[in-house]
Length: 388
Image (tube, rainbow, N blue to C red; front, side):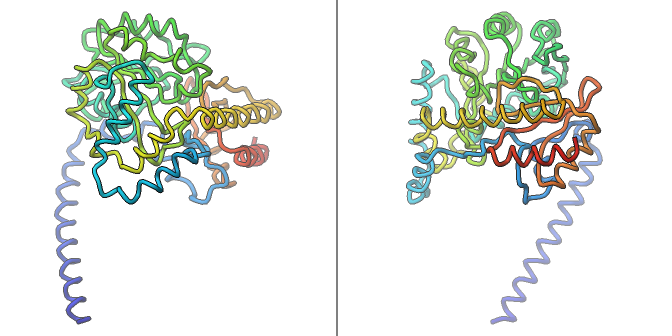
C-alpha cells in the first residue's frame, strides 16, 4: 500500500511540475512581452506589499488603516451562529442587507450593489471607464488602486497636486477634465493625507462634473467624520446625478479581513457594474451574518470612534513633543513629515516591531501612521523616540 501511495504521489507531483513548467514558460514569455508600465516599481507600496515586507510578529501593526478593535461582539456572535448554515449560498442575507442599507440611506434597493470590499468596484470602474485609452483624474497623492489598475489596462492616469493644506484641489481637477476623461476619482477623506474637502464645494463639483464625465467618490473613511450622512455624496445620487459612491465595512466596522463593501448609484450604473463583479458569489454567509448584526450598531461604532480619537490625540502629543509637524486627520491615520529618509525610517521602525508606511511627495519624506490601540500607539512612541 505504501509503495502504491508513493507511486501515485510521484505521478501527481511529476504531472504538476511538468504542467507548472509549461505554465511558467508561457507566462514568462507573456510577461516579457508586456509593456513596462504594467509593473509597479515606480509606485509606492500597497498596504498588502507593506504588510508582507515586514516581520509578522509586530508589536504595533500601524500600516494598513485597519480598525484594531475588530467587529462588534454582536457581529462575532452572528458569525459563530451562521457557521452551521454556511453550506448554503447567502442570497437571502445579501438581499436583506442591501435592503437594510437602502432603507437607512433613503434610496431604493436597485441603487445598491454589494461585493467583497470596495476593491472589486475600483477595478470595475478602471476596466469600464478607461477603456480605449480614456483617462482617470485623481489627486496626488491619493488612494491609487483604481488609477494604477487603469494604467495596467488601457487607461491613462492624470495626477493633480493637492492644495497647500494637503486637500484635494477640486478646481484644478475640474480644469483637467477634457474629451478623453473617462472618470474622476475622489477619495474623501483622502488617503494618505486624511484630509476632507468642503461638503458644499464637493456637491457643486459633482453636479457640474458629472454632466461631463463619471465621478467616483470613495467614502471608505467617512464614518470617522462627525456627521457622515451630512458629508456623504449619496445625497447627490438621490438628487439624480450620475455619480458613484463607494462604502466599505473595512474601517470603522472592523471587517477588513471579512471583506464587504458596496456602491450606491443610479440603477443603470449599477447594471453596468454587475457585468464586472460577482456580488453574492464573492461574499461569504458568515460575513453577511456579521454585517446584518453589526450594521448601524451605534453604541459599538461610537465607542470605537471614541477610542480611535483618544489614540489619535495621544499621537499628536507625541509628535508635538518630538518637534514634528503633522496634517490634522479626519480619518483613522495621521501623516507627518519626516526628518530622514522615509525608507530608512520605515526599516528602523520595523526593527523595533512597529509597522508604518512612508511616502515621498512635494520633494519631502512623509510617514503615515494608522491609529491602533493605545498599547500600539505607546509602542510607536517608544520606537519613534529612539530614532526621531
